[in-house]
Each structure stands twice: as C-alpha cells, then as structure tokens.
Amino acid sequence: MATITVDTRHPGQPISRNLFGNFSEHLGRCIYNGVYVGEGSPIPNENGMRRDIVEALRKIHLPVLRWPGGCFADEYHWEDGIGPKASRRRMVNTNWGSVVEDNSFGTHEFLELCRQIGCEPYINANVGSGTVREMAEWVEYLNQGADSTLARRRAENGHPEPFGVKYWGVGNESWGCGGNMRPEYYADEFRRYQTYCRTYGPHRLYRIACGPSVDDYHWMEVLMERAARYMDGISLHHYTVPGPWEKKGSATVFDADQYYYTLNRADYMDELIRHHASIMDRFDPEKRIGLIVDEWGTWFDVEPGTNPGFLYQQNTMRDAMVAVISLHIFMKHADRVHMANLAQLINVLQALILTDGDQMLLTPTYHVFDLLQGHMDALSLPCDTHCGMLPCGVRQVTASASEKDGVITLTLANLSMTEPEEISLRLEGWKGGSCDARILSEEAHAHNTFDCPDRVAPKAFVPAPEKDGVFSLELPPCSLVSLTLRRA
Image (cartoon, rainbow, N blue to C red; front, side, top):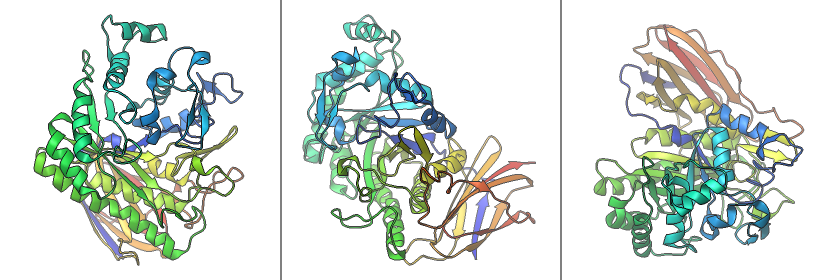
C-alpha cells in the first residue's frame, strides 16, 4: 500500500499555468492539414483555423504556444509569411520531409490562432540563418505602437494595433540545427541579438536564450556566466527516447522492459532540472531567470507507411504516464521552471490531437492535460508520498497537490504496467467538504483511433468515503486520478 500525506495548511510556491504549454512547428501535419485548413476548406473553420481543434484547446485552457520551430525556426524568414498569400514566397522545408512551404500560415495567422485559443504566443526567431536586423524588425512590426514604417505595414496587413508579443526565443538549438555553434560564440550572439530587440511602450519582452541539449552542463555554465544578466529565460530540450536514435521503437508495440525503460527516461527530467538549476543558482540566486523546457515528450519511430520526415506517431497510455511524470516534475521545480512546451500540438511526436481529413481525435496525452489543469496558477501543497519502486528505478506512484480559490486539486498516478495499487491519502488540515474525481485508465498499449476515438477517455471515479481526513483509493495499473476537493 502507498501512503500520501498532503498538508493543506501550508501552501507553497505558485505553479505557473505556462508549465502546461505546447509547441507548433512547420513540420509534417502540425500546421497544414492540422490546425490550419485554410479559409476555403469544407472543414468548419474560422479564418482558416479548425473550429473543433480550437474548441478542444480552449477546453484545456492551453496557456502558451511556441512557433514556428524547432529546426524550422532558423530557416524561417518572417517577411516571407506576411501580406497577400498569393504573393508570399515559396520554399522547400529541407528540415522536415522536403515538402513545399507556401507560407500561407505566417505571423498574422499564428497570432489569429492564439487569439482564438486564448493563449499567449511564444515566437522563436531566426539566429542561424537570420540577422540581427531581421529579428529586431519582427519585434518592431508586432509591438511598435508609434507611427513607424513597420507599424504602418502591420496596419496595411490588417492589424492597426500592436500585438504585444511578450515571449521571444533567440534562436533554437544553436548547438545543432540552429547553427552548430559553440556556447562561447552563441553567448556573444545572444547578447548582440537581444540588444536590438526593443521594448515598445508597455510591451516588455521576455527574452529566452537557447539553452542546452539534455545534460550539456558546460553549455549552461557558459551561457549563465556570460549572458545571464541579459536573459529572462533559458531553454532546455529533453526527449524521452526508449532506444538508440536510429531505432527508437514503436509507439504502440512494446513489452514490459521497453515500457519501464521509457518511464525511466521520462523521470530523468528530474535529475536534469536539478543539475541545471544548481548551475543557474550560482549565477542567479534570486531565481529571476526561468528554465524554459520548451521541447519535451516521447519520440518513437514514425507510424509505418508515413513520411519519415513528418514524425507522425500514435499515442498510448504509456505516453500518458510519461506526460504525468513530466508535468509533476515541472510542478515540483516550479520555483525555477517557468514554462514548458510539449512537442507537439497536432500530428507530430507526442501530440495532443490527431487528425485525418475532417476527422479528429483526442489522445491520452490530451486527457492528462485536461485532468491536471486544476494546478494552473495554484499554490503547491506539500505532498509526501511513500510507495514501492518499479523495475526501472522509478517510484510506482507519483502525486501532486495544489490549491487555488479554496479548491484543492490532487493528481495521483499508478505507473505500474500490470499491478493495481491501494493508496491511503491523508489530508492534514482538511475539515471536510465535497470531492469530485475522474480517472484515466486503460492497459498500457491502449490508444484512440479514428474508428474508436473514445476508447481512452476520463471517466467518473468514486474513492472510498473519507474517514477522519483519510481517503482510500484503489488505482488500476497504468492510471491517473484527478481529485477536486472543495472546502465545506
């Protein structure tokens, strides 16, 4: 039996809603034939954005969306994607599938998508093949309220008022596809680029430096030593890959060893954040600078018969367990992790949504984001968990608790592939009240298909009646329960 004790009397650090962000790249069918179908499509849309997808993302209160990449960002020139669509420059997306990119989805379209969803935009600018002037003028085009040439151009393209975009990434993976730079060189480039990205009026920028890949602690050390004073955030990328890069394994066909190894690779995020945070703490003890985990999630082999450059993979309960492990880790480190962006939004890697023509389905990962959304902008509550260990060295039960406006959210997952777990949940300081609960539970390989889109979906869950502040729950294997408690 696992025991969990939550102290409802001592709320702690705030949990930023931006930990539940996402990432949309010009890759495969994430943008085109994903969220964007064009104004003339028979699929119901508003200004080209699929209504069903926007509605689904509004339901989970998606807080922030990163765009246009990814590796695509450092080959993207923003002026190619504004103005009349018939005259926009066409290019070949050499990073992802060598397909033609017609730039019909550009800056205004992205910001229209964010408006419809109700989320903050996070724009990743081109450092690898771009220029300081190009990034500076993109910021001016979007945020300048005075009568400049670029502000007039924005007005001519349909938006007289400034957009006020806050979050800006200065390059992407500059250690790799973004330029193969050394950390010393990139630190100087970051300092130079950010200098010319101005704050216009009330629209203060949040400048995000390109941080390390996985455990490159040297990169973090150099960037913090040489450029910390100029940044508001620094990124970290870590994907859960359960095999060698050349053969990552199937998203749907796996055995118990592969299942547990995948959980181990997801749990590694905790060690990465602790070690990178310890470096950041030396240069930023006040924790002003946010660690921005703007690419995370599972990465498997593509589905058979699909374009290998499109990174299309299915999404099972194994992915759901990876998602809850990761999100609980981000919340645990919310004093340093200020944003996280799952890769990616639709039809790519660990997607929230899959589409096929006019059909759409919600993945198990989507439902995790739904069940955890009560933690957004809440105050964390001390949560002490005692449980057994899985064969991969990961604890069988993961739990997080928070409170906002008198409502306590508890999310508990049994990560075992095959074994149920009894849980004794004690709420210290709880004087009684109402309790609603939902559960996401299926066998590890279960996933939704267009023939059976609701096989994996949350259902009502009834814990044993509370007794003296203690709830008894029996969690099936591979399950997530979300409890919503309102004080009497």
